[in-house]
Image (tube, rainbow, N blue to C red; front, side, top):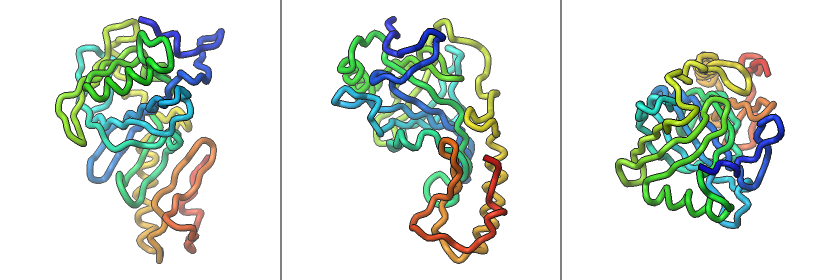
Length: 240
């Protein structure tokens, strides 16, 4: 297998490259759907500058991914997401996926045996179209080769995401590493925050707040409109 399109420095750290596609893995507690994991893969750009693509394929994995090749986690392909929103975590108070979100893992991936940007583009899109895709992850928790197999067709198709039996395969349950790679917080921290915020929002004369999210090093509210309600900010703040 040829993985050399994932560019690394002398210390083995992945460095930015037009061929390094990004991925993220979210731990998501939704009031309706319960706990699940959202795996998002940056879609290669048709122009070949893959690092600039802002579109990501999204897979909802009910029981989470596994590094054990004998496990076959079932996933549902969801609507596309934005790469620019990869590093967000916090609470979602209105809209789709109401609940709490943790940034569980991130890193880069490539398509094995692809020698050029065009080959990466073709292999990724053909793999999604044909229901058979292999990727190689270089993340903090997700490592090595994984096989994606489509089981059903349709808008929300069902997929199996299975770890290949390579040097990164292990019986260790990576889901026990349940802290955010950005903050060190746990999902329970944000879930507790979510229920406290819900009680506060019931007393507010506005529906404009839709969540409280961390992106990179900044905390901010998300609004449907550019309105700032009158509220006790201290009740909604958290440590950065």
